[in-house]
Structure formats: structure tokens, C-alpha cells
Image 1 (cartoon, rainbow, N blue to C red):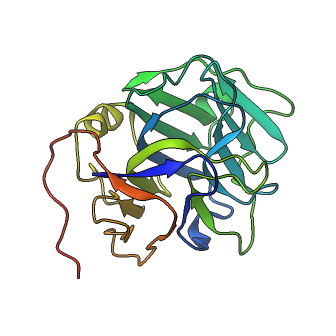
Image 2 (image 1 turned 120 degrees about the vertical axis):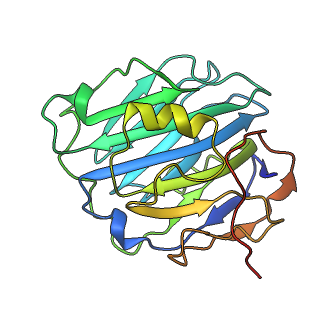
Length: 221
């Protein structure tokens, strides 16, 4: 299962996850199936102008991530009506942009074009801004499509773990796990990480999700 977003005003609000603010280590994994490709469609963000923002860049299906004031991108990441596994690894302890920020499409590392001052050494503090899935408060852009198996760590996963994540329902590592929201419990958007970062769903509806193995989630009532 997953959640389907209508591209107009649907999103999931996971609240202010303070552990993301100022972190030098962040990993994000999720499955996405866009139904249409369009400009500035928000995928995940915390702080529309101060923290970070991941979005679909344009009708070509390019992926774009803003950290602080600068945007970094990869071409042709998304295809309409096709599930893709997105994994983003941020490691501010590294020196070169290409070592600080990496992302993977279906387990394959993508080439990133970096701009401006490059990648900062920490994720900027966005204060009380909520973590939002499926929409972008900064642009008003909302995803038209489905999202499932959202996992977030304030830790750096390895490339080998990324390959495991591609085929794993459960998180391959619980060290630093902040959110495990598979979006397979109707419209509850429960976080099964144990941190209580449950989502509040606005508009999005339950739908079929990607088919992966790797165990089942805990029981939650």
C-alpha cells in the first residue's frame, strides 16, 4: 500500500522533527510513482526557505534538492506512472560536494549538478517547520502520484545499505532512524520507528504500493 496525492492540495504533515535541524548526517528513502511530470512539485521538505526541499524540477522528470539557498539537480530521474526508489544520502563531514550529497535511483547513484556555494556542512535549522511529504509550501507545488515506504535517518547509510533498501520493506538499519512510515495503514501515516513522528494526512488516499519484501511492520492500534 501507499498514499496517492492529487497534485492539487494533498500532503502529509509529520510535524517538527527537531533532530533534522542542524544535523550533519541525513538519509532519506522512499518510493514514488508520479502520474504526471510537472515543474516544482514538492516531494519532501522541512522549511520552505531555510531547511531543505526535494522536488520534481520540471516536465522532463528531473530531480532537484535545495539546501539553504542553493539548488542541486539530476536529469531524467522520474518517468510518469512508474515506481522509482529514491535514496538521498547527506554527509556534511565530507569536503567535496559529490561526497557530501549523493542520491540513488533504484539503487544506482546519479550524477548531480551542483550550484552556488555548494553543499553546506549541516542541514540549516528550519526551527519549528514541519516535515512535509507530497507538497511544497515554498512553491505551492504538490505531487500528482503515489508515495510509499518513507524512511528517514539522521545517520549516513552506505551504498551497500542503499541496495538492501531497494528490496526491503523494513529499515535495513535502526541506528539513527527517525521515521518509518510505510503509508500502508490507510490514511493514518503511522511512524513505526518508535519516535512518535506520525503523519497527519490531508486529502491523500490509500492506493496500491510498490512490491518489496523484507518483513512486516509492527502492530499498531
